[in-house]
Length: 188
Image (cartoon, rainbow, N blue to C red; front, top):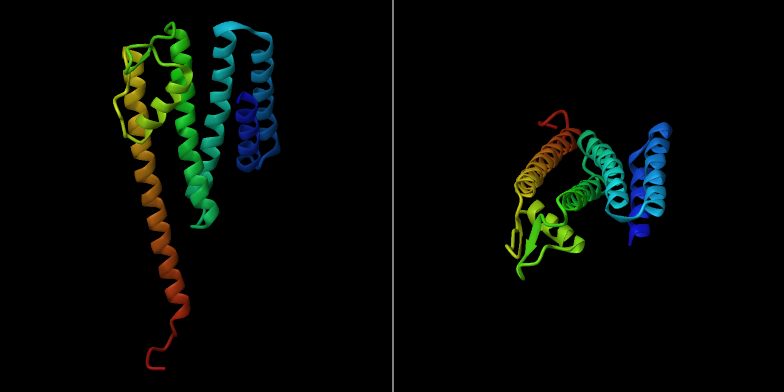
């Protein structure tokens, strides 16, 4: 699963990083994360790997959002917007995992009264991002509750801003198209 995640991050880097030096820098950070993951054992190695992957993913999301907000409405714009939203959920899931390591693996509790596994951490992240909040996993530390609030607000603000931007672009494009297709002389 880690290999698939890293491949996905590399592909996202290729799509989001036109300047070669930024791509190379982000790729170097990703390679460092992989080396640390292979060399270091235990929670500290996993924590360092996750933090480096979070840094790369944040860079990718910033590049994708910049693309979405500067271009017109195309299928690529829509897919990029969805991709950024899903990556935001991944970033928060990874952040919950880091927090879990820092807090001794007891930041989220599932419905069985056990502390959440890493898979449940990602599930929790996406339910918070979308504000679905099934209630089967809950944050039990102040840091986890705070991060949950930040993620829920981020998810909602992203959707509002993205949809507002896309609607504005659509209206603008429709107005330009109607002006260019209408004859200059209405009496014709």
